[in-house]
Length: 102
Image (cartoon, rainbow, N blue to C red; front, side, top):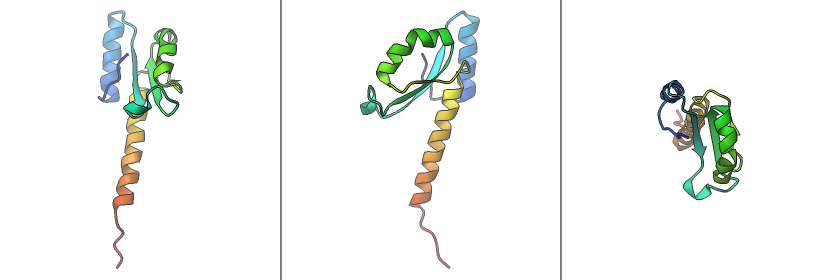
């Protein structure tokens, strides 16, 4: 299980590297603060080898009960994580801006 901070392309490349060596691979991201791990507020998004996910699901749900499997494409969780972060930063930026009246 890899929880990268790289790009979706980096994650895909690592998955391909593992697959070429017959290594099961899961990539994902945690949508939570450390204090939320183990609680329903934590969410874990996972992609990669389905059999590896099935073998690991109970452990992953201990960390984040609403764990979601996002198919074989291990880059999906990273791409979704970046989208969520971008939306959050945009909302913060807009709320911090004060409109200038003319």
